[in-house]
Image 1: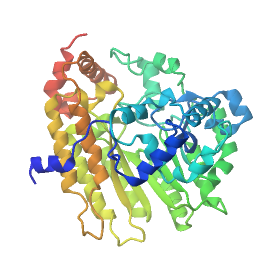
Image 2: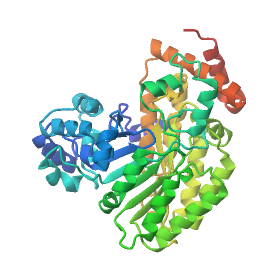
Image 3: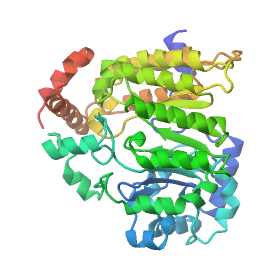
Image 4: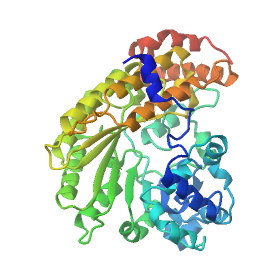
Length: 486
């Protein structure tokens, strides 16, 4: 297949746009129904929540910033983990025909393209759409039990991923307390940033009123859940993760329509991996949930992956992936790849590795075929580690990776359904779109390239790593950033 033919087939789009255009009858009708309520109406404000319990922060949808949960509200109402007065104000704005300013991501999409924004896609999700009629008649001051819940119990984590930070990794917090922020222009990951944003994590060994409120609310919340996902930190290092799984295992009248998802870096001690497999099998064997999903993360292959995800032992990680997949029957495993500048040189190897997993575990020979999925989402923050900082010629490498995914797509008549889906290909295509959209002559890009050099030079000093040995393909670019000044 020629590059030209593949490019035409991929139909490259503008960065950040949805692949759902305004010729879909279902979404056309849904958008009309939502706009009849209000031009800013989005069901996710009611049906979805992410709760960072170690920070005391919450938000519905990942586009608006999180906001602090007032402890006074929580003492009176444990559901204020989701139903804060602030969020109720935004719900009222939506029902009154207004567009909440914090949801500007969707307004930008709707005002500047013919594509459906995420407010339409999220409202049309199976965990949202069935509740449309009920929600539009609600008093906005009423509490609502969310159907899609993500929760982080603590920031306990044994990794220090380069793009992460102290709010979500106890190892990062330890390093920051010892050395301070990085010598970038924005003093990356300094304690000042965390305190200014009111995101100082509650240490995981200390009492946490937000976690206490969660457990007060949990029995009622659990009955109505569609999807429940545990994030972190590293969830397997939190006692509350195990408490959730044990609750589901021992519940005599389980919510069998629940989709249960757990994140893990799969780099924890072997005993915890074994405990995870044991819990998964007990949940599977007793049909306690409708679906089980394990999310793990990797952004490159081999030593580059270890550099990005400091603390990772790649071969052991890959062994654990195989161990989990070979020990379970119904598990869906998704690789969350936060695609960044250091992903580009070896991402092709990762694609081949995941394709091999699809071949090994995605057959119909098993009781319930396991699915292995690659979710490639481009890193946006910190900006000094995004793919946009790289020289423009690297966009061609990303384009070839999209071509490879297309080549390894699901054959039309393959009953085993082995291969990459169009969604997996589209994800990498978007990364290409986004990279080539940057203005190569902008002062901001120059500053981020300067920060790239400053960050990784300091990274090597603090962590005993070697950028040039790990990424020889980026040697000349790296040294050029060290010569920059701002």
